[in-house]
Image 1 (cartoon, rainbow, N blue to C red):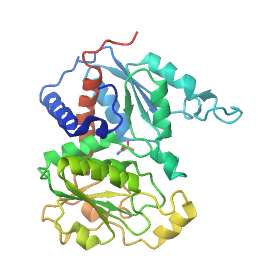
Image 2: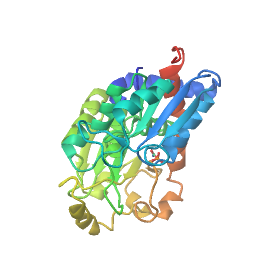
Image 3: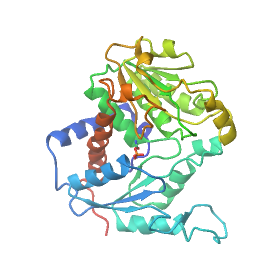
Length: 337
Ligand code: CP
């Protein structure tokens, strides 16, 4: 494995192999496997789980890590080509990425979507540019339209819970004060489809996932024997569901229009996930969310604090699977000079 950018790069067998490694390392930890190795972590956007779990994962394998957060303690970074750098950014990624890569054995990067131009965000310009500048394995810690570490942890959580391979997962839009990126819904829809599940994307009008994201999920489903559908009909969607995966994302029609997004979501106050949503679900239907979650706006206390919620288990599994990602990328390879 040369990097970890997208579960699609691994395919279904590759993901299953990585999950087997995660379980092996959970049962039989290897506390010196990455002794002397260094993981660089570059966060253009905030994080609680990804930042801490990547550092802990590296430590559990005997390695170490450093964190750079541009603009807060280190230079703001420019990424546009050909610009006169007379603004806030003092350094360009063209220098910063090769320099950071020269200090570490693998580099993890979080770079969210710009959120203005859908075609541009779908093309993943930031992580692609960084990949082209990085000579060590690159780990996607959430890019414009992907979050493979989250998706891998969620697959593991579904397995832990005994959710059938062909079970029904409803990826439901829930409320939030403003537009959030498409990375997690895109990654979760693809992951569940690749697992072979019946995936239903439940969302209000105007919030349909872009065709390219749905098509990627459908292609994974076709390979794995799953199905992918999309609807605004809540009762029909959740009927028989094994899992409701709550997630917030921005208006997609039109995309990147903050005023239109605000007007659209003003009428969607009934999209706070409540216990009543589960009346037609499987009796033991679970609530998943990648976190952070806004209580009583996205998901009601009664669900988050009730027996359906597995959000803490999901977050813990970030650590479990990332140990495997780092081990697969670095164990047995030569260290950087
Ligand atoms: N789910 C997730 O990626 O959490 P953070 O944004 O806190 O890293």
